[in-house]
Image (cartoon, rainbow, N blue to C red):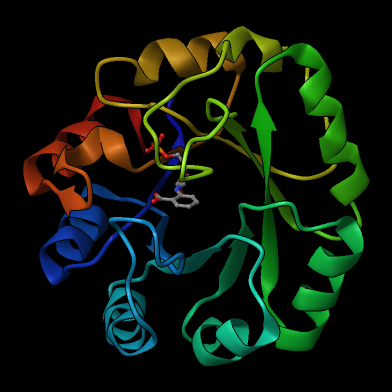
Length: 211
Ligand SMILES: O=C(O)c1ccccc1N[C@@H]1O[C@H](COP(=O)(O)O)[C@@H](O)[C@H]1O
């Protein structure tokens, strides 16, 4: 089975070209300063304009953002991905205030963690299930950690959902088969070093099991 793909943590035109040519549906820009994938508002606007011209939808990745950051950056993207501890009320307020579609990231370690997604059914338009980082880790995502994919096997929701966390070209097929995911999100698995996207790895990922 093939999947739709979001290529996340993009900061170069070369990576956007590889994503578009390989058939990705979304590209993501990280607006979290501690991340090696951080892009500022001006670069994000330029990259997002280019991405739209290539037919890609754009996603801004945030961790508990304030309204100032959102005002500066959300204008550049079609979707706001919330990767922090945003409540359903806060997620809904962001969607309404900035007129953007919301992806809420839900961190998963065990089966019980999946239940939190239900609380966001009115506030978000898509759910992203990512591996819960180890305690004390400085990034809530983009760590290349996977969770037990089969936990998603019986998950049903009115919202579309993405599988994320530690995906790469070698495990995408197994992850999709075990989880039943229709959408996959990848960041560190298509890099040569933290924050350095590889055109070759993006192309390989997209040709391995996507589209
Ligand atoms: O990529 C980052 O640096 C990042 C920072 C803060 C929040 C989320 C971040 N990335 C997201 O993490 C997942 C999984 O990434 P990976 O494939 O395991 O590296 C993905 O949704 C990214 O959008």
